[in-house]
Image (cartoon, rainbow, N blue to C red):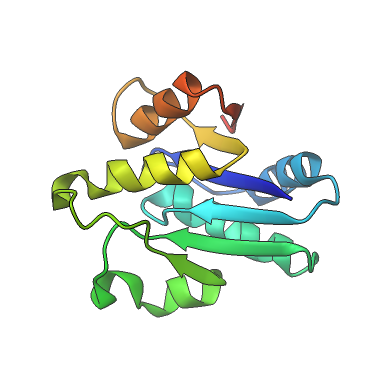
Length: 145
């Protein structure tokens, strides 16, 4: 099984990008069983989740997992998330201050994946920090730029 996570800047513009992402995913998965990990925060994450849903409609061997940084039902319970993901995972961040929860969640998600698909256009922000974390851990990184 291959495990693919996503990270990218929130200012991503998804217009006309779906086929390109689906082609990238097809190439990475190559018919294997696959789990997709997503934080669903910002335009790139939402775009990736929509592409995964489309991929799953044609491939029974795929699972979509939302990694949540919070236990809040308000944060985790909206309809969009429920319809896009098969599972919601909370990586046990009780001791982490709320302002660092997303960063720590990203680190757990990256530790759990085999491949990270990144949309990175600048050298600051949460997506860049996630990319740097993955790079330092020698994760396979594929850029979607």
